[in-house]
Image (tube, rainbow, N blue to C red; front, side, top):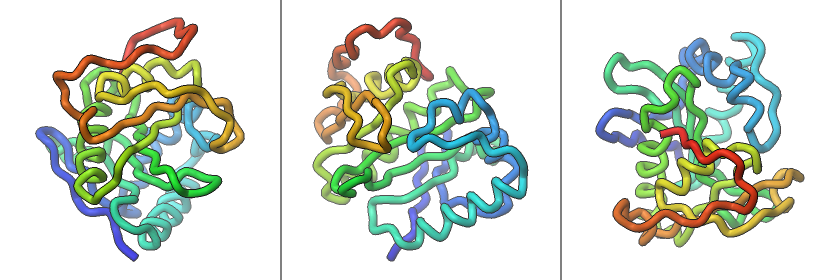
Length: 197
């Protein structure tokens, strides 16, 4: 039993969720542009009461996870504003693969916060003996795919193994965190290659 530790980057603090984060979390998880890409599929959160309930579930779940798994609020250190959430979670059905993921408030897109979060979480996971991390992305979510590629993740194929959805799968190993390494190839038939930087 553990709780996610606080991770600090140049501009961000990744910390445990707190119930008073609900209004800021609602700005992210209540936004249809965020909710449409979530896997497992989840409707956008419609109100503050529902967001508080979801945070209670996430906080309780975090207490049952073993390191390095966890859930984090992404906080922009300047101003202490919660701008999204991040996860390192076992992927069903077998809970053998560890998923890395994030959701950022659309007002904060194109500032590199997703990439900064990815690097911090991956570094944390690899410091705990994890061999590889996976990201699962809906095929049309080219913004997320670009961010994962820019952070060293390699596209390894498409599967319906996770969450009963057709998803693109990206893999990251410790050596891939080298930011000077070339990016991986794009999934086939990728129409738009802009990333959430």
